[in-house]
Image 1 (cartoon, rainbow, N blue to C red):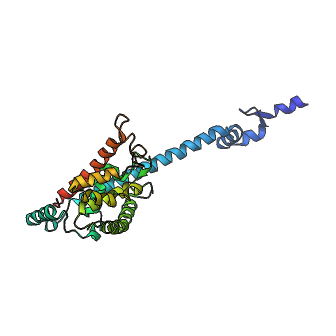
Image 2: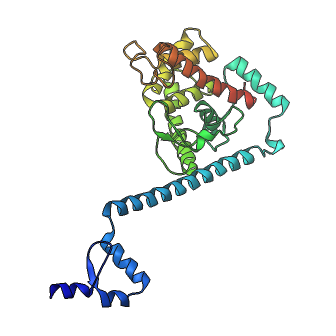
Image 3: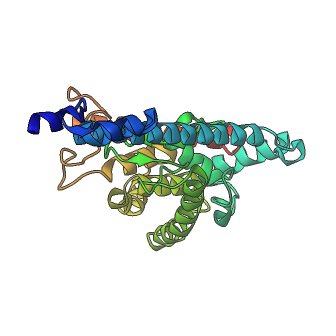
Length: 294
């Protein structure tokens, strides 16, 4: 009797049976669905959905990178379209050089340093971070790059310390962040007897060093004042103060910025710090020269 009942059952690929009469009543789509419900492998299904999600993420991320690169190109094209009436005249450039040579500073209001993305302070920090060239043209790094010392993803002209967001959000955060901090550093300069208006280049370097590392940047105003009292001037005083800010217990070995990929191990820690700080200082100096302020 059991053998006769088996005749009326249809064997599925899974090895299970279904009533033959019922099976022949199903259309091809329903047959495939039955086989899928019985034969599907949870592991294979999970891998499939993972791949689908991963490919979707790659598509979205690629589109986001493309959009941000387009924004950088747009910013560059707009920054190049400067009204000739706003460009400094030859007389103004000569006046700026005369002021710098005789008073160690130029007449630029400190509250305008971070007024917008094309202001002196913003362009200087952008160049020091490698996110701009000294002529103000943005590099691809401004849209996103990994910090060589910390490994975090930075965006914006000041490298926003891994805070995420869009490029526009990162730039706005940088402006507000550095604008508020510049007031604090201005007060620190005045407390050690330095007029920041007369030492504008040193003042911008102080902001840049603080943006690179608040811990080491906090030492700069006092060290810069000491260098000026020791008869050092201009970039000599600035570089010496920047380098000495990285001393920890009289040594450079403990600073986290004196190691690869910034410098190879074959270079001693002090030389590595000096190389990196000189590069940043020269970038700021290059921006000021391009703007006719030096």
